Image 1 (cartoon, rainbow, N blue to C red):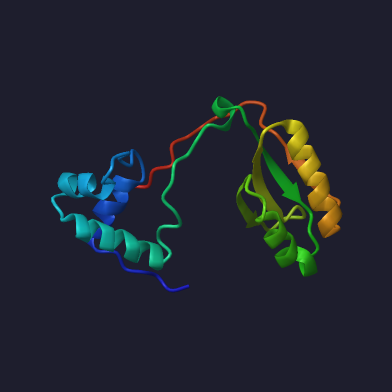
Image 2 (image 1 turned 60 degrees about the horizontal axis):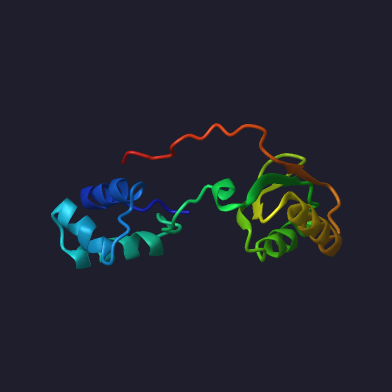
Length: 153
């Protein structure tokens, strides 16, 4: 993967949109006014950053428990020849927030959010049955230690 060069304005835009994205009718206008840029320039830069893979998504982060949901971290031991199939199947579930490969016996890790622990257990059973991967750990948090991930560019 080649490195994308960011200019100073890209960095200012990225620093600003990481946290506290405006919940407004015209959020890019609000950002533009704050950054002394035009609304179109902010929109164009964000589009370019997304196209270049710098920005994966812009969206809200919710605390599942405050909305009546539960979440868990899962780790699966997936044979190499099933990794693509398994990952693509897991990604079909709307409650999966992300899914990634690790260099470990338990090589596929993903987070799962659902209405109840029972629903997560049922869906993990379905995933296991359909993919023929029977070694999936369900690792719910006992205590959450939340950090703020904000990267100064």
